[in-house]
Image (cartoon, rainbow, N blue to C red; front, side, top):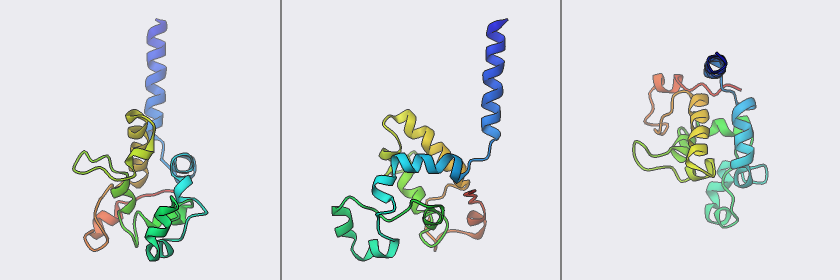
Length: 144
């Protein structure tokens, strides 16, 4: 009987976690701060400054700044559509993104964190702005 009660409790918690909306504040920001912030934090250059002197910034171990909601949205919907998805993708449908490896110290942790990012974004597309359809763009959720 006790085993049944434990199983039911675990199932209930799992179902409620699935029903929970994934938000930037509660789910994505903590992952970002621990896994990505060292290279993409407040000391990193804005996107256009990074592009102008990309080699310099990479030599310093910095990528474009992404440490706020508005900075991160820049790399999901517009103007650098799909950049976040392309870089974090695990490559199951092709080549893995160059930042996937930083989502965790184990494959299990990387997959868990990737799932949170995918659930947060909604429509996980690897396309660029000129390739994306309005319907695909409408599927991007990115709740604050």
